[in-house]
Length: 310
Image (cartoon, rainbow, N blue to C red):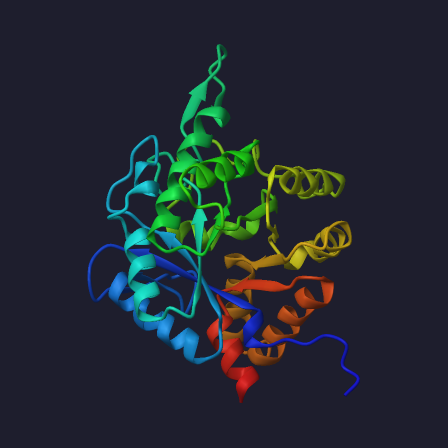
């Protein structure tokens, strides 16, 4: 009766990794309980999530082929666009979020096409990446995405996506910005799942230094100024202070991404009998809500929804 923070299945966004083919449920070794799914199996998973009271999914694509530009990101016959249409047809009540980035689709694993300066220094070509991201956003929105969620951390991407969506008659499609995304060590299992580990260099040049707070404020305010409708902080557990800071900064809807490494640590400790998985999982998710997150992207969504409904 005096509990200050509520946690319920309606707070969750459930991530799905979608791959070409049929009848595929390919387990991800570093993420027990999570798998790469073909579109037909993803539809089944979507029905399960909806039945548990989870209102939303976020989709990531695992293409058959990759190239330097990441062109699979805007392929309307690719796994994400195909899954968006199939899930929207099967479970129209679900809110579908399309993650917009190129790292899953480039053959080098970075979030945009690469360039080298005169000294041979490798970096992502920021300005050349923006129209590609916009193209991917438009393809996903046309395929049924209710929300576009750019995760690339390129400068100017929110304005570019807003212009691309508006220019294609999609002005009602909101943007959930990965506004505050740190260059974290907690992403390792995701990179196995998405097959997106960079072949050379890393992403510290365009993701945020884990030591920075003021930068988080600047990034969030810039994305709001460019037209973001919703904000996100990623990761969650080591950044509860950042979630609280962004919450104080803005009243826009705020999501926290309970990322793959956080999930895998929980699973590993539970499998070793070191913790009570149900109790600790719900405690962790409650801490994200308590810090100020309105929504939580979590691989634990199905388990947590079952526990909350028990």
